[in-house]
Amino acid sequence: MSNPTLSFDLLRDVREVLQFPFMVNALEAATIVAVLAAVVGWYMVLRRQSFAGHTLSMMAFPGATGAALAGLPAALGYYLACGAAALAMSATGQSGRRRFATESAAIGTVQATGLALGFLFLSLNSAVLGGMETFLFGNILAVTRGQVLVLLIVALVALSLVAVIARPLLFASVDPEVARARGVPVALLDVGFLLLLGLAVAATSQITGVLLVFTLLVAPPAAAQLITAQPVAGLVLSVAFALAIAWLGLGVAYFSIYPASFFITMFAFGLYVAVRCARWALARHRVA
Amino acid sequence: MSTPARVAAGDATPAKVRETAVQLHSAAVRLGGRTIFSDVDLEVRRGEFVAVLGPNGAGKSTLMRAILGLVALSEGSVEVLGRPPAQSRSEIGYLPQRRSFDAETRIRGIDLVRLGLEGSRWGLPVALSGPARARRHTERGRIEEVIALVGADAYASRPIGELSGGEQQRLLIAQALVRRPSVLILDEPLDSLDLPNQATVAALVQRVCAVQGVAVLLVAHDVNPLLGYLDRVIYLAGGKALAGPVEEVITGPKLSRLYGAPIEVLRTSDGRLVVVGSPEAPHHHGHRH
Image (cartoon, rainbow over all chains, first blue to last red; front, side, top):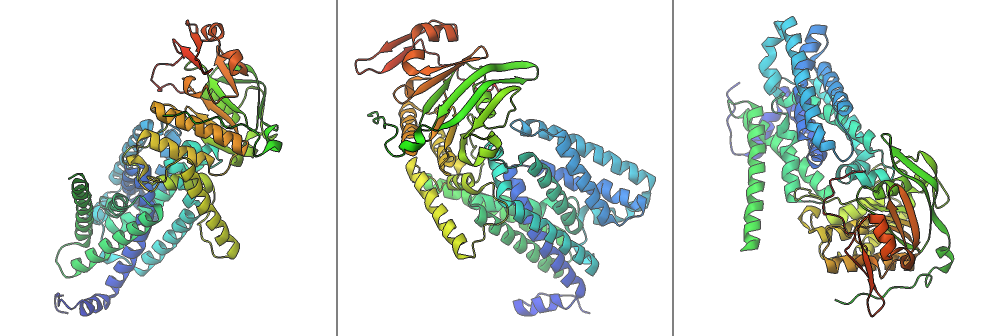
């Protein structure tokens, strides 16, 4: 097999990429994760729970090391640790008006505790250390059929849940007091959303790695919300951005010697900066 | 600016006007060992516009939240439209105490109004069948109608965070009205509005109240912008409530006693009441009860 070279014939290039099963797996995994992260991330950005999302992504550390210690699959450790952290955050956090004032302190405490546990598990079983780079930055080209299938099931479950709670969750996110008065179970939705976020983060971190979860979870929805304040359009745009970033990143990585996570993250960053600049220029244009 | 004429109650829906909408019997609320209020008896009928007045921390918001079923009574009973509040939720329009959306809130005014209509529905808004599509069409019309009613057409499609306080408030009132509620609970809707806006909003609420036979409970600090529109006032002070027609309760001696400060009530040549040395509370709203 010769080194892949870009022929600048798009159809030929795409066909070449798709002849390798590992690239097909990677593209499928990236597609599933991009859709899931873009939808859940849109609510997260709207709810200003990026710090909670960040903390949940850190929970992959105790999850992976704990799973290795217990002899369980790492992915299972991710899901369990993220779920437990989501519950811990909602138990220690406050709901209602002061929620945002106390929430960050509670989340920070959960994060520190989770990382300490992860460190403990690591010191009890240092064999995990070998996979640390993959764990931190992901290795999308090593995704297996089985992993793709699990990701698909997780994403379908999570997205179905989002579909069921879509409107009450939006109501509870932007206008909790009136939502509560209208009988929307705001407190339950707060917990439910953190669990959903945990699910999305655990799924995403297997692809992008723990440190780069935010690439797909924050940048596409944040850019979409800068462009439109209409909920449906924002969600669609967020998904479109995430897919474009993931596909482009993978495609470019195939023809390059640098890792896919790097390109995916760079494209996400570029998108966000471009949208910010465009908005700024537009605002100046209006004033002038 | 001219003051809009007061709309007489009963023109459109005389049958509804006399129905009792909100009823409290010797109601008391205790929070964390502190009695917020006790022995409150209150009856508000449909088509009645009632202002809830009182000094800061007197429990005005708590009383409203008790009527909404968000705060449990420690004694007595509360009924909305003859049922416990939780069962009447879809018929109560609510505007909580001052909430504003900062510049980064990326959702349009019209979306907030729409949430007032369908925000508590589960599932996705897919309209495939004929009736579902017809309902969607009706609801879209209702949203446009209520936005026009509060005069927010020009800016309803802009992100709520980019709007001024008065513009936000109008859209929030539209949100509270969108389901055609039988009871409207407005917690300081005039707060932070400028004077012309206060008068317009007060007139709008009075018109909705009279034409649609809605029972309105409006919490206010300053009674002046409301004087021309009210049917009755409820005063909360020292844990007790005092209710009565405007002319009976808004008198110098009664207000002075309630607020513990000298207050005078003057009558202008066209018969309007003016409260001087006013019971306008200091402008801070950090207090939560």
